[in-house]
Length: 103
Image (cartoon, rainbow, N blue to C red; front, side, top):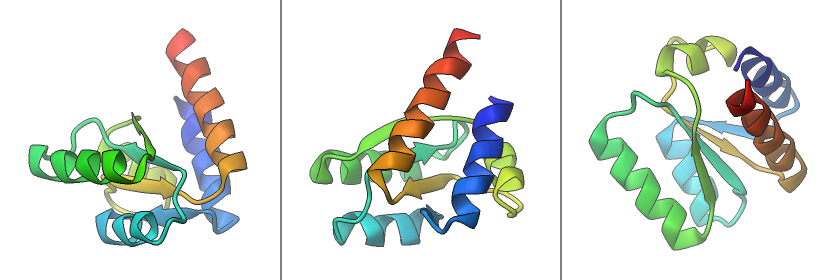
């Protein structure tokens, strides 16, 4: 999981992420989003809203780490929702998630 969080930091510096629910929802509605990462301890209400949004716009959704861990990796205090803007980065993140689950 540490490799994934470090990689997310690099992707953020490249400007290929949206941080937070509002920015992620706007990107999804604009057709710019390819993948969403949701913190495992996200509130049920936020989780339901983001799941509905992902179903509506056919965006892949994964649960990754706790809000504090996601936030720390991306320079925030806590972060519940992260959107990935490019298919290449989304594919690399999915590969990292698969590797993390195998460990």
